[in-house]
Length: 377
Length: 51
Image 1 (cartoon, rainbow over the protein chains, first blue to last red):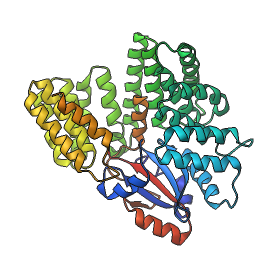
Image 2: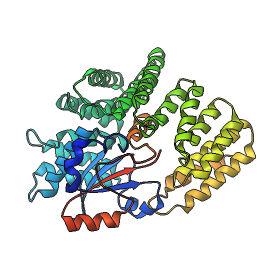
Image 3: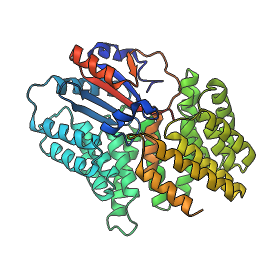
Image 4: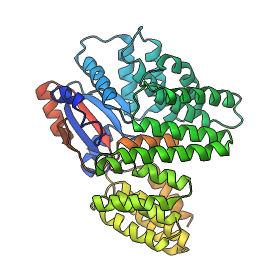
């Protein structure tokens, strides 16, 4: 959003109407904030009421400039409102629960808000998206898919349709293979997702489009349609290449690097990632991301010495919780190279670092997973 | 679902700040609270990571 949305002149009218705060979740300075407001997915957009110490709005994922304008308008109304409707009060409660990381309770609260919604409720779309995300994050794939099927007709043609359809589809694809309604749900949500994709009137962020490709790939994979999986992966990588080619600045182009690496790895063509990542490393010599991604690509190419050299450069620049991921990849490179001793030492280093992070950045789940891995080595 | 959540990181990714129209305070929650209270406006927060 930094590269594309916050530069949009249509948002200038909001400049003095909010205080704007950017929170880099990797920066230890933000540990206290992150303890108060856990952020499970990036980006997360919040509007906070400092006087009442409440959350006026919560939105998961990227937004286009028109979407952000709409969210800001909604948040301002909530902030200024002296009395709220029952649905608004329930929505605010759901946002608080989601912000506190209580996804199952939040999902139920979003459901209650939607049930109490007046006709033409301003927050219907956002509440629907938040509901589907909360069920998905709570691991309740059945309820996520069921509610997505029920809500889709009511958000059809709006900017909320992509998230409702694609997240619902992703949930359906994650259902147990023996689930009696799995095929029926997959079919309904795949059809909805394709309808969203074909609707040129919906202004979609590249996030939305990339998310749609991923959900369609998951669905094709879940249906055992290998041919469609390959075709969709190719379309996805072409889409990302076109988007990167349209970028007007190096900042805009690098936004697509991580997804392009994922797509190339999925297509088993990691060598395609090398030139763009080398370019990004030249453009942003202080950024740990290009060498960290080069390490991944070289590992996939079985060029382990080049992978370790890139990992060295990433290690010299990385900070915050991301360092754990860089160390994990480094251990994978050693393992692939056949150096079990170095792999074990690297994971031990990752455990030590994970334990040293402050509250808000420290994750007990991550520490447990690393310790489990270390014990198995 | 893993894939989709990964997709959401797309807009968060990025390396350097471009020319921003919105005057963001970087990584300083206390200053943001004080300014918001003084101006009686809400705080917009983007939580992101450089990856």
